[in-house]
Length: 170
Image (cartoon, rainbow, N blue to C red; front, side, top):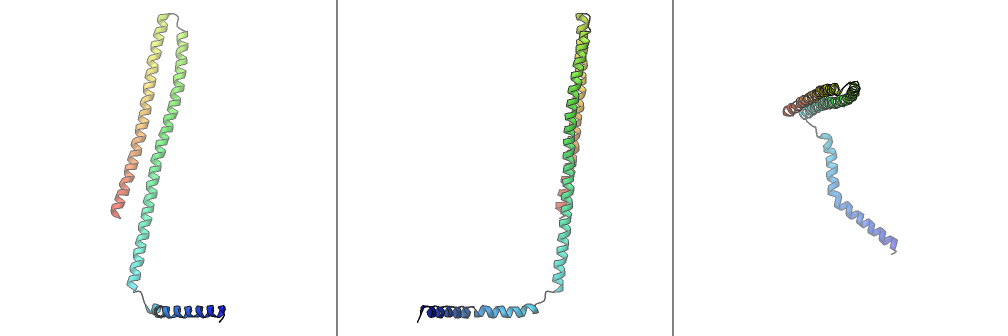
C-alpha cells in the first residue's frame, strides 16, 4: 500500500468513527427540529412578558426624565453660584476702582488744605468715608454670596428629595 491510500483509509475510518459517535446527538437534534414547530408559548405568558417590558420601558423613561430634571436643577444651581462669583468679582473690581478714585479725591482734598489742622480734619473725614464705603460693599458682597449659597442649597436639597422619593416609589 502506498502512503496516500493508507492515509485515505485512516481518514475514512476516523470519519466513520465520528459519525458513529455523534449519531445519537444527530438523532436528538432531528427530533428537536420537529418538536420546535409543535411547541407553543401560551398567550398568557407572551402577554405577561409584553406587559412587563412595557412597565420596564415606562420606568426607564421616568428615571431618564428625573435624571434630566435633576441635572438641569443642579446645573441651574451651579450657574447661579458661578453667576454670584462673577457678580462678586465685578463687585471687587468696582470697589477697587471706587477706592482708587476715593483715594485720589482724598489726596486732592489734602492738597487743598490751608493748614495742618485742616489737613488732619480732611484726612479723618476721608478715612471715615473710606471705611464706611468699604463696609457697605463688604456687606453687599456677603449678602450676595449668602443668597447664592442659600438658593443653590435649596435647589439641590429639593432635587435630592425628588430623587430619594422616586427611589422609594420604584
